[in-house]
Image 1 (spheres, rainbow, N blue to C red):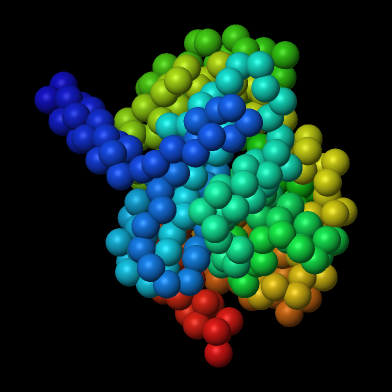
Image 2 (cartoon, rainbow, N blue to C red):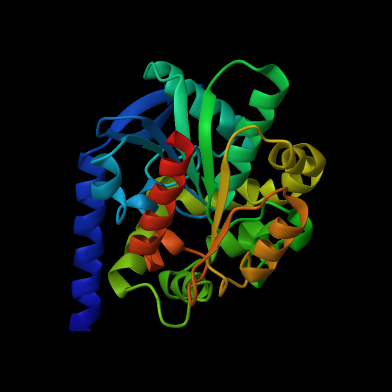
Length: 300
């Protein structure tokens, strides 16, 4: 009980520290939380589902020492607004990122994305290829995510959330059930700490977030609908790409890296042995090293 209480307060304190350092931005009348720190080339960090910009906290000091790092909580996530009556989509989240960058006067960025954020990055890549205007991407580095929908292995909890039982499942969510399901996608030797699990839980329940999860989870269908366009954006990209993958991930691990090598010309893949779905939380030093090496090659 004492250990659980310590984890509870540690998670709350860490989240409050993260929140106090953030700012607000209005997107379609809704408040978006974001962090904007550091100096140097702009780096846009795009988080995954069901988490938030806090996912980048272990990389934050090192990244902000080299880049101007911009990391929002997308609409429906984390510390941002979570409107119940909203048509959530990945393309709309791409609009949000473009709007935030315009608000900040940033026109050129490197991108570091994870999970759901990979699809947002693919949409941004597709727009750059199709339009040739808007935000200019200097490089895109993807972490574990369902970039090829045919290779994405949804977890039982995701399937339930996407089913007609989704709203009921969201209402019945408890911290213990959520923590157990969340930990399953980490590597066996890199499990999240109790305080990390509590922090992610708090980010989800903030603004009654679970009520919108069944709407957001429809991104799985959107990936299928946009498959040719988004995979094509990777296959024909003039923007340098790297895929950093935790192969122990049951959702988008080694099998996704294998598919990437099969479909993407001259694939640049970095496998992190023993790591699961959240490389930036499980192996931040390895992710940092692989990302910085990639960006240095881009600049050379």
